[in-house]
Image (cartoon, rainbow, N blue to C red; front, side, top):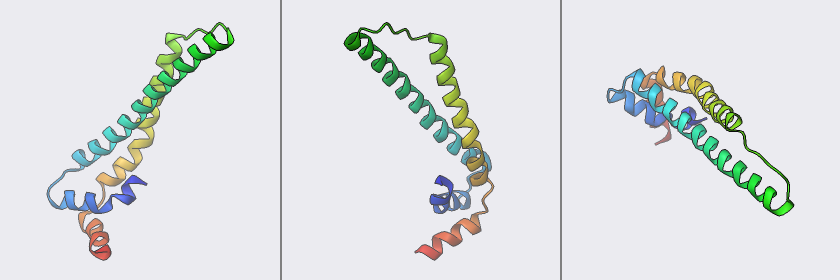
Length: 106
């Protein structure tokens, strides 16, 4: 979705000399930042909820560092895997096709 919404930006960047590598890097970094941020938020919320349940309900809860690491790693891998296809699609976009959308909308 982000590639489709940002077709104009990609076309302008490619027309100004951006390489496939720079556009691919941009989309991959954005996908990884989102997924790693989500992983960190999940760890914080999970730890907080576990502590809350432990204190309020008197349940014994334990957070395994291995489980946290696996969940965080899985979040990063999902971001890389599902960010790769749109990033590749954006990097292979022809500037004249992208700019055609820009000129049509303006």
